[in-house]
Amino acid sequence: MIGRFLDTNVLLYSISRDPTEAMKRERAVALLDADDNALSVQVLQEFYVQATRPTRSDALPHDIAAGLIRTWLRFKVQEITVLIVADALRIKAVYGFSYWDAAIVAAARALGCGELHSEDMAHGLEVEGTTIVNPFR
Image (cartoon, rainbow, N blue to C red; front, top):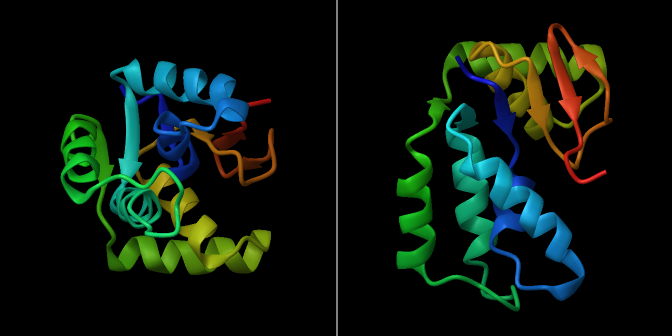
């Protein structure tokens, strides 16, 4: 069973070296230690782009970022499909999310995840069977 879908910010906090984000890093690492997580191709892509961004003060080299992604492939990963795009467009129209957030919600719903862990969306909002949870509150 898939327990929760993790948004990109959870992955990024897990690699943060910022002392002010230590509690978020610990929480993110704890979430990633569980086996019942889910991700999407979009989340993995966003992680790689942000983690290796040259302007990031603690940017990861390609090989480390790619290695982390390979490790996270142990989780269920939702691919980007035409059905995900169509559902994301519908969710965007109904709920007013950005397209990218709507695509994450659509991916979580497609995998049957009851929870979507994200710092970027409204904590407690239920979207058609998937509840948004801010794990850093």
